[in-house]
Length: 218
Image (spheres, rainbow, N blue to C red):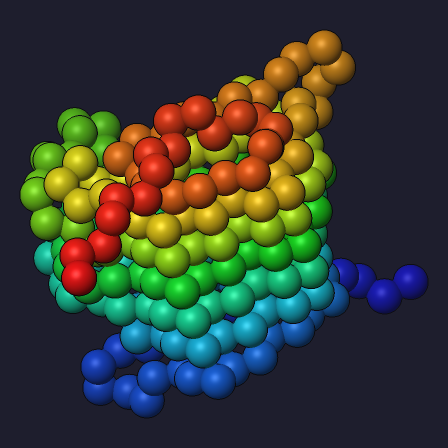
């Protein structure tokens, strides 16, 4: 019986190198102890389809904005992927103090099996934060993110964590057909949402603290 391949696919770009654009990623199975796929700064027009991830850290956009950098990511589309026993599912992570944007991102037709953080936006990402990370006012702008058809189970109560910058809200987040239940019989899931604007169809868990979009200036 062939062995499963263990790897991390990282789509990383730097100012001195060509940016990845119009890229299609399609893998059968990824098993690793880190991100299954990490989309780094400068990436755009990435399609990720049919990836079976687990164990590992899930599929991540970022981290972005480290050390005050201006980072950009756009047009990243994840579809038909599954996560089994991962610490994260669909994740966007940015550091405080950075700038730039992560926009036009979608996660569609996602299957979850005992995932720790199924849907997570973390704009307070910090490594080695035993002493805490200082609050900073600037942040990477997260906008135009679609979650559509995300189903399965979570091993934590907080199945949806949207923790946006206190100074720059996440905007135009759209949630359709979300059904994430507890992996443990008799237990429930809930959402934690801070400073995020968007729309949601009836979901499990309920997305009660998602603020309605503000009218755009003409």
